Length: 107
Image (cartoon, rainbow, N blue to C red):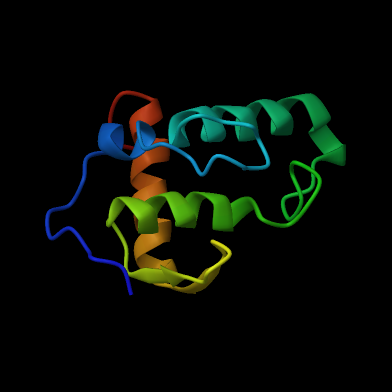
């Protein structure tokens, strides 16, 4: 398991987290990833795949890996860098916080 930071990060903290070097969106940060996801939704409209927005199904794991590596959620990676375990509930809450902060406030 990873070391977990005991304080709750702000939405801005999460948005500025670096993404794993290889991620489906080619994003540098969590914020860049979320923007790419929204742009893909907008551009593809009815053809958008919630399961495979960038062509494969690792949508959630790219974000969860960034949160694990930052110590914001409990989890572990195997020797190849793939997620073995993750606190998905905590990850979902933090990504929701980050998405909300994209608008500059709470909703």
